[in-house]
Length: 336
Image (cartoon, rainbow, N blue to C red; front, top):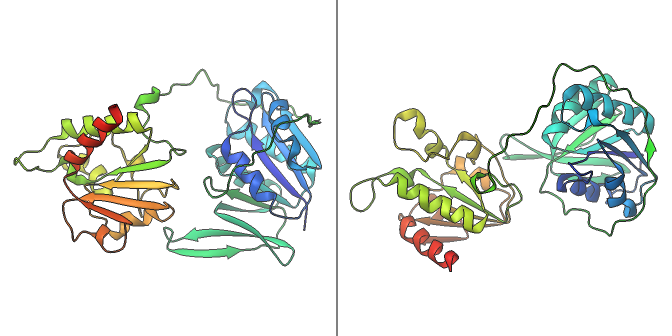
């Protein structure tokens, strides 16, 4: 097996986040020699975090200029690490930072890149990656002879590397930060209880358009729907998804949930999350929407229609009930 370079960027404080640890665990399933390349304002804490991974070398580009995600600095750091390691195989977690920079690095080095890999294995002494095409309806296993070969691994597909920290020796790769035209002046983030997309949450809660339709009394209750959904999200710390029909309502002049955007959309034209459990409410379970649930391990749904799509083998359990009543009761239980 050829030498493999793992590229990882550090988080504030110098540690590695879960996607990088997942990529490391995936690489350890292969037999090739491992080299780790770190990028960040400080890299020694990250190196110590993975000291027991068996890496032959740990390289690092360190400096305040490499603390923030920026194409110019990230690409320069990744290129320098690749040249220092000389590894024909380069693997990195598919974070927004690497997904933006590594295709350009592959071009600079005359290599090739494959993104959104969901599995990594050895075939005939060479690595092979698995990825989905056509909105997760077709699966392919890819190998390449072109080197260097860059691979970006999707998060949530591998268990994270978890061993006690130690003391690691880091080889510094000298690199003068390239001239940039952008400056990071600060970070603006919503409050924790206002955040609705939580990739690491154990539960995915999905709302359908039925939340904004007329209820049993003949009138819609979007404000109550917002209170019920947000109350459940805060109490359970679950992640929020939405059907296409719901997120499209804002363009049709109908009542909408104020916190729901197209970023929450789950399905063929939305995202494909990987939460352990999923709960769908007021959604009919149509095929384009259900495609987004392909990697959710346990699926349950609440719908008043016993003949909806969820009842046709798309959900493990279907509760034929009023979602408003169900969530009122669930929120009361969570409150106690």
